[in-house]
Image (cartoon, rainbow, N blue to C red; front, top):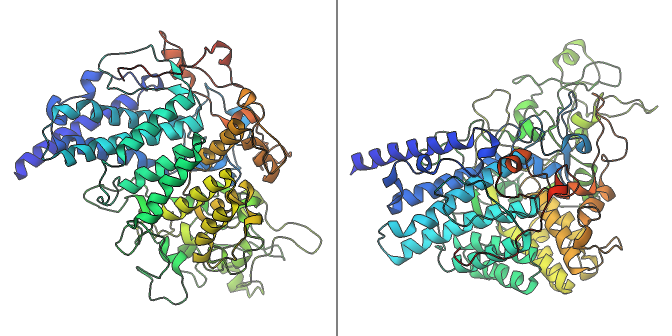
Length: 616
């Protein structure tokens, strides 16, 4: 039996290597890789084990959004109001969006942006799911339950990618079957048509998928959570309330309110700290994590992602350079093991995912006792101290004192406040990194879905229905856990819901995805936003809530802010949808993949499909 397993794994590794090669070549191969190569060896997918292995590959594909240098999650953040690209010493990073975000630009680089990653990798995930769905009848199963669970998880993976793609790119090609011959005739399908199909599939999957799954795999509540998002995106608010309520009242996953896990005995910490320890995210005492991706150093089943989370490098400020004491001396050191060792505690950040004033200051104005913003869980730059050994050896009086940003005359003591000076949630970003003496953020599990978001999704559905009291009740469940002040129905609007999502879900949610989803709802319903405006789908790319929200709260875009390199932060309403990579459009010589309005090539668009062929 061991030899059979070994031979199967070796065959599947060969299979996945071929898949990887097919997708790491030119972008135009995003959908038309050689099907014979894709399915080599031919007998890899005729068993439940083979199908599950392909679904495991889909999970690894999903996981990659949150890990590594220039993680794709950063691109989601910087196309919203919570973050900007903080790399300030060169051109290329996504700052001057009007100049740089074009269909034929480099759209998949850790140094620029990862728009192209979402296009390529999400279609790869769709291909995995379609392969499982198409090959299901080739395998023999131990039971109908086993077959249904595999089918349900495949439906989830396909819906997860299409939900995200339709909020990132809008109308996109819809592929619902295994591709067994080369194709160059793909056509764009309307966003709502795609979402209706995903809603249908997810409703079908709910009773199929097991209520409890192995760590890092899809369970029933994950399906319901995604279904809630799709229901909201379609404006089906009653259905969103029903699907989220199944999770909240189902008892399988519940909000974690008591201390647990690795630091449970540390009285200086709290449940918010416990919840976000990577060591705690997948243990039995954590009832909140609905969908958690697994990344552990040397972990046999899922392996470890190259570079781990890298979150301290990506999202912590470049605090260790370019900050002077008030008397003009270099104030900071990233050396480990010195008397005031700050790098071991907070990591050696480079400020790539730079939180905005909105997410680091504005939403915390009335934080009071909120655990998510208390010292030890959250750091502002003023909480750090001057720690350069040269200050200590010279007897400088500022050694060990808290940082200051300005002299009394207003002269800044930091030469790059974009990259070097902003607050951050230490409780989320602290990931032990034993492989580096200057931590970058090591290996660790990461939340994709958890129950706190389920409550906030239901609160949003109640808001759209006009039931502000019920919305406030759900928001208060989350706020009570954090010891934050409770709110009343009169406080509830989309502005507040987005604020609470930013407080609770920073660097967890796909913020651009969710903000665009809300913008679509305003455009579809015609409901007046809190800014007094109404919106329409007819001119979505030129006038939308996504853009107005960012312009309202941002302290960067379209205000003449420039990096020390001289690059200006700009943004336009059409950036609500990302450009379809030109390589995908140009290679599709027998069909038409539409380009989004505002980008070159949109003049060639044709009406998108609004029906799904019956045979699919």
